[in-house]
Amino acid sequence: MTKTTQPVRCQWCGDDEDYQHYHDQTWGRPVYDSVELFAKLCLDGQQAGLSWITILRKQQNYYQAFAQFQPQKIALFDQQDCERLMQNKGIVRNKLKINSIVKNAKGYLAIEAQGGTFSDYIWSFVGGKTIVNQHASSKDIPTESLESQAMSKALKKAGFSFVGPTICYAFMQAVGMINDHVVGCHVYQECVELARV
Image (cartoon, rainbow, N blue to C red; front, side, top):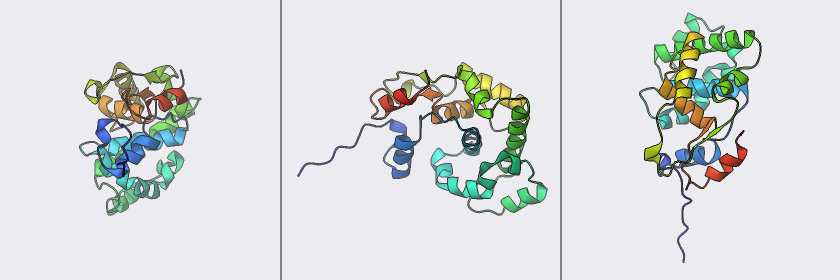
């Protein structure tokens, strides 16, 4: 009886099934929907000081708690809503992080009020095209870039919080603005083909 060989994946997802599924189906695949990009940016901010797996497992709870990440609805959340969310065991109960999602929703609306979509705004930091890297090992992958630094600075100016250059870089990797799958990874080529170039 032959043992089934596991596909080669980026090292960071390890043996965890949730992580592997996220890696295989989501991470590094280009996202162009404005609300989906907004949700992902907020969720990446929630992981500050924690591991991504913690937020990944609470993702559905966040969607329920924050009106499916509809910025128009979240922007109307008041202090009472934030206090109610502090009692929600399904999310990370951190006042600054909860308030940041409300602040980010207001920032999102301000960006779209200037004309154009949030998606176009976000993708402008990479010139509208995926940066396709060719890393042989996970050790070669940086934690920030000039593009993530520029995004962080602009988002903070627009009123966003929990959007430091490292969070922005992780976000860019996740939504396929940067393909940081290692070259030997079984989904590397698929993400290259999906990329805007």
